Image (tube, rainbow, N blue to C red; front, side, top):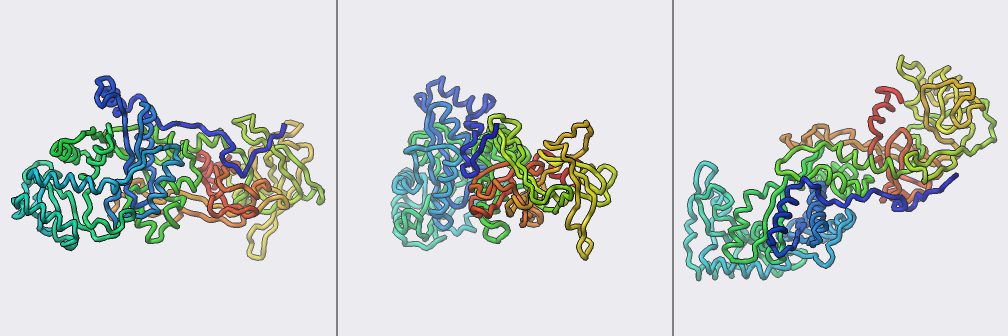
Length: 576
């Protein structure tokens, strides 16, 4: 029975919906379970995802999103989306909108709990004033270089600033002058008064406020002083009554300052918990380095399908459920480790194996003329849509005298273990007939431009009634009943497993990360594939109609991922 499927509605096919909830071995879940049993926080679970709106989110952020929203869902709590917008020179509404789109696309909803640190600027300023009045903060007039020198080192204690013992009244007046714009950038900062000999260098009188005479994307020119991350972060958590403030391991040393600020002010105190951030092989996840790739033109933008950004993965063809499943599988640990990008690829491959319809596409076409096939005849052959799901039924593919096969599926002088088409050899055409190559046509430069073949009419459907066997089955399309398309083949952006460890990560960029093929030929049913349609090109991998560039009648497909080991086979490393 033939059952049509929609190429213009990518959501018309089922997907495995991993919900991102952490597994039983998650140590954070263990801590929350203990808090729930003890009654800490009154049985509430309130988490937050606090991105800085200075770039697009990447796969590492997806891990944090799945963790924070997943825990909130699991414990019937809430998760806040809060933008840490304290650095006006690097932030923009574009990034704010992109981050919200990415979180929603991943399948999570913050409901009414959308916040900005800039919502709390007046409160944060008030908290800073309270620290000054308590003698726990002071305005320092040292330069940034002097502050760095005075801080000391891991083996040498710091020394106190000559401005450290200014009176409360003087500090209040100077801090007000900072707010009023009476100082230029770098002239002074507000610092916490803690301990210049502290073993933890974070505690050596850290900066709480600095001057930035930049227009803010929300508050415009209302402020010219902005709180530092450590100050704003813990107090924003406190204001929102977060219960579990989950962050990555690089903030472990900052937890002491987080606790000090909240205790010094005597305000509500969330619990900071650190986990290992994601490090993915053949990838950089440093926002600074990703910005370099975009600004210096190594990629086409934040959503370039080679980028590890969520928008790049979305454009490549990854699904939200595959990313959630990947985040769930890698788990949550206390130690950093390098995760093989193959785990991410396997997550989408496993899903699409079950859900993606099979189609035929020829990426590097070689013309085949079947000499004994009637010139005006066209046949409809049955093709299975997905052997993993019988309910997806079958479709009709058109067969005619002139076909295209892959150039790599023919060799005039094949080596011993090459089993595909060659002069005098018989192979099976998928869903169609056995054909035998009887001739080769070359151009004036000696390049093969056409094969002359003969078919066996008794093998319709791909089997011989006399029981004879062939060693290869090739995919194909009818020349007159196929659509021309562009296909983009992607590989890892870097050739080294850990590009971030290089002195200059750009020296290990993969020159073959994008192969843009034009003149490809696809089944006619893909002519109007809607942007976002996913399918498997048989023997070639899983592909996705590019949501930006694919147009009706002019499809553009991105390869999401290869079939397991299949790409090397098609290139001739071995045989199907």
